[in-house]
Image 1 (cartoon, rainbow, N blue to C red):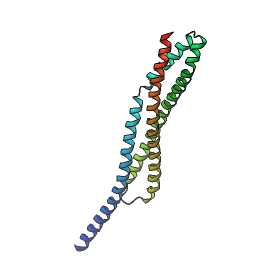
Image 2 (cartoon, one colour; image 1 turned 135 degrees about the vertical axis):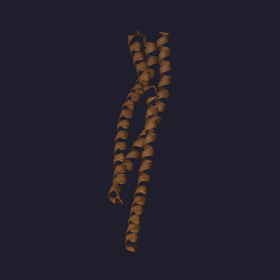
Image 3 (spheres, rainbow, N blue to C red; image 1 turned 180 degrees about the horizontal axis):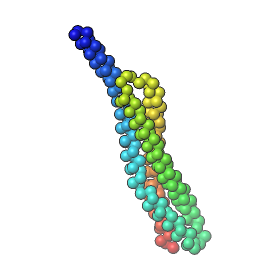
Length: 176
């Protein structure tokens, strides 16, 4: 009977020691999962900057400008603002494409992380072989997060610039 108790206790010790190890690995993965959820919120916030609306407004203004007959003085005045406006609109187009690319990266990161979590959860023993994958995924998630933060700052700046330049362009359009 004592032998049977020792076997049960030994099994329980092994089980709990392994599950504690895996739970610490799962904590690390859980932190990464939380980081991805924050990044997804940031990406969705970027989409609310009314990018499509601003790009459509710019397209309409470009069409109006092209259809106007401007004298050489008005053209000289508008040239510098037009050039900045065009550059700004092109940057916003680029940022809109980058949002989609980063959104895809987030989805891939999420799937990879989910697979690592499943591997950890399904294992009864420590999965030291997964450490390199966890580190790699951590780097990828950090990299994606940095890109999203940088994009957020740049897009916010470009939208403010667009609002200012658009106001100037519309004043010129309405003055003619």
